[in-house]
Length: 112
Image 1 (cartoon, rainbow, N blue to C red):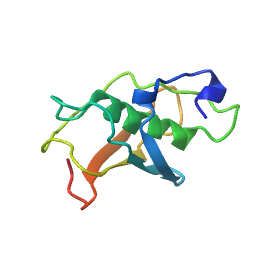
Image 2: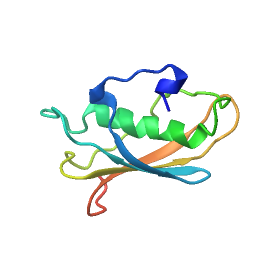
Image 3: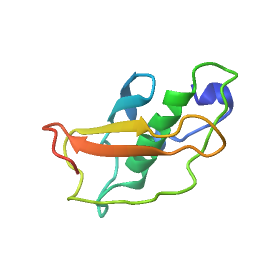
Image 4: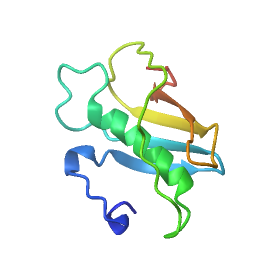
């Protein structure tokens, strides 16, 4: 989808394995393969969670593309290991500024 919009991500940043979306929310499984040593949350996985939110807005080729420009709050409850999922819900889906909440959790449902 991003490639069709002219956005090219390298393989390290192609972390979305599966996706399910509703009207204002999205659930994705993220790929943990690659070099993540030294990171509590590897940048490419955070990027994948942010990419998943774009999917919730991109309904067709005429949909506007929004890029994340800020993070209001960030909490870490431990390093990312094993299976990783991201659940995001849009708070604002209209207008020039849009906000969302994203929660990352492991395969057992524990928030990371």
